[in-house]
Amino acid sequence: MSHVGTPSDIFDDDLLAAIRDTALTAARDAGCSHAEVRVERIRSQWIRLRDARLESAADDTEIGVGVRVVREGSIGFAASVALTTDEVRHVVDQAVNAARVTAFAATTRVELAPEPSHGEVDWRSEYDTDPVEVPLVDKVELLAAWSAGLLAAPVISHTMASVLAVTEDTYFADLSGTVATQRRVRLHPQVEALALDEVGGGFETMRTLAPPVGRGWEYLGGDGWDWATELAAMPELLAEKIAAPTVEGGEMDLVIDPTNLWLTIHESIGHATELDRAMGYEAAYAGTSFATFDKLGTLRYGSPVMHVTGDRTTPHGLATVAIDHEGVAAQSFDLVRDGTLVGYQLDRAIAAATGFDRSNGCAYADSPLHIPIQRMANVSLQPAEGEGPTTADLIAGVRNGLYIEGDKSWSIDMQRHNFQFTGQRFFRIVDGKLAGQVRDVAYQASTTEFWGAMEAVGGRSTYRLGGAFNCGKGQPGQVAPVSHGCPSVLVRGVRVLNTLAESGR
Image (cartoon, rainbow, N blue to C red; front, side):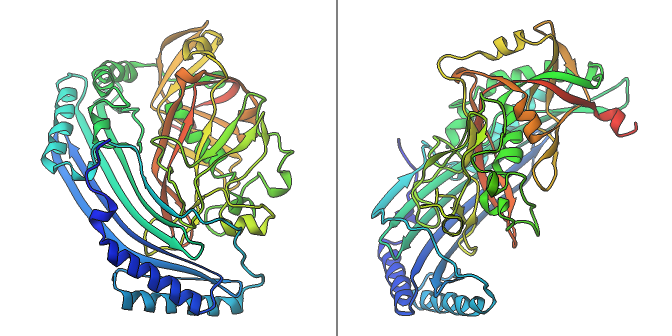
């Protein structure tokens, strides 16, 4: 693969070595048992068009250096935007002083689970063309062409088209001897169309189903997603949606497409199996988890066909790396196996505090100026072994139900147990066949009830990655990109709500 730019093009190698040696030597001399230094450049581009005309554009670059230390059982962190050896000495002093101060408030010593040195690591995510290097005019022209094509359809009154591109360059070194140079690119294109309901006086919208991915600009040219086919189908689908009847609520069987299911996985499994959350460390802000540590190995999370993994090695995954922000190598690991909770997502401190031998590489900071915290891996539901059923096979097994595509709004309680989700497109299933769209749909369940009612998972041919750029966590808040892969699934007897009736309209 060809790559436009590398981290060594961004930072001078001699400067990086000087920063590394200065930071780690100063930390060692100060009596730190662990120290890590992270130099980063994060470049983000955001472009949005309304009705084929450029509405907003932003190009942001963040550069800085952060140092985290462990000294006498206490953690300290400090950072700066100045990349000089004198400033790095000052940053180390600040981090060591922070560790001294926090030690007075600590009730227990902080230990980090051991991690061997990985030596020199040089890693790039898989891409051909760095998306932030593509000229603005080319991006605008492509989104404008897509928008104009949609606006040519009589049913469509307005469009919004956007793309968010990020290139993240990281240089990491720690006292164990790991020195890692990494580059990640990620891309989130999206097109939405709006149609007016001339009869009812309202409106309906429909978004593309293409997920955000860890790919280059070639993704918008058809590498990994058939944009031409999806955009060509949207006018007819939206016309059908705006004329569709409102759904009749009740218990129904659901066949759920990966473009919708990824978000249910994120909220009800991804967050619930973060061990810091399950231990209560997120209670003040983002909530706790019903999947508490005492239930490891016994909690019946779902049906026997449920196999969920955490994975920081997934090709094109948004959370994919080689080395995390604590120096831990990327891994794949089980969270739910045969329907039973068998694992959690861990960083080094949580792993040590709960008796695990090692972190599974789930530490990340969204800025060089922020301390790494435990963050989500690519959490994915595995497809059926062998060929497995197709989506059409799953639909054929439903007498009365819905087929759901695309994510939209969501709601879940602070323990990740009771939830409600909507979507982009809902199709009635009658006697094993699709029977047109319906509107005003949400499905509602508890986590274990929902996954326990999952009767079948599709085969590898139905498997897709979904995901988001903006998973929020922590105080002060941080955001992290993460992908969730899954096949189509069949879930029996789920509560379906009519959102129009629920709103009182």
